[in-house]
Length: 287
Image (cartoon, rainbow, N blue to C red; front, side, top):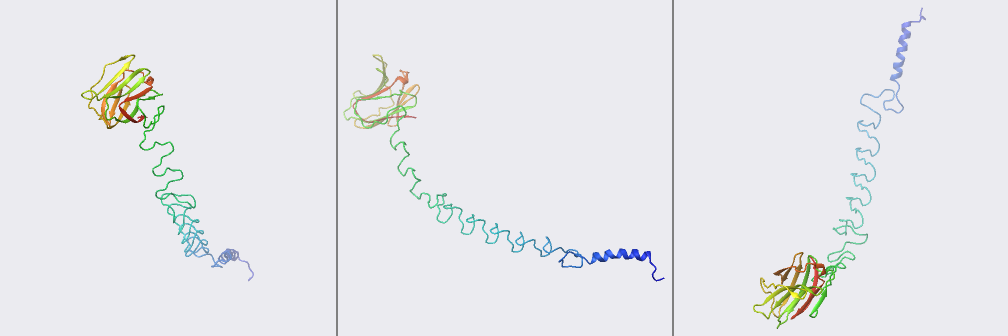
């Protein structure tokens, strides 16, 4: 009969329905509505899709910028005044900024000192820091008198710290035109630890060195490399006190050495100068 049901037809009809349903559906708005995407196609803007963009300004998108002022964006600046930005300055007075000094930053509205100027409070040309030695003047050693300037002879000066190793005593003056003798003496109380005595009234002229301990003079020392003084002429005597001796220079020439006979150096607390000279200065320094 024509209405007979066929098991084969039923099975066949059920297998075809899903196929037709699958081929005719897609997600809304798909360009291929009614069919699945073809091979090699994606949804709009999918990464890697031909001509696709991810979102406006995505890195690498044609003409895209990441965000305003992103580094490398055409015409972009990072932030106002960022280094390298067209016309940009880093901060007021930054080196290289228009009108700024090349040697370093300064406070807003100020520049570094120009040629011949100094920072506030900095010593200007020919000036020194407070307490700095004046050019041409020997600084006083701690515990010793300051440079004296011109004084009259005989002259006595106290050495409160005594004689210490590396003490340099500088005596400046000039020999009087008709001089006979002059001397300087380092003293310990009434004893004379070192007596230095140039004599113009002996022939040949000679410098006698000696010590007087108690009421008695010791043996004189007279040998010398040369006699460095002239009547009517200026001189500079430098006496360097060393642990075992005094070393004497006159006008920067070595003259003699004198070994200590009074060894209690810290008790040698006076220096006297006398004789036929004009004394212009005595100064002390530790060298």
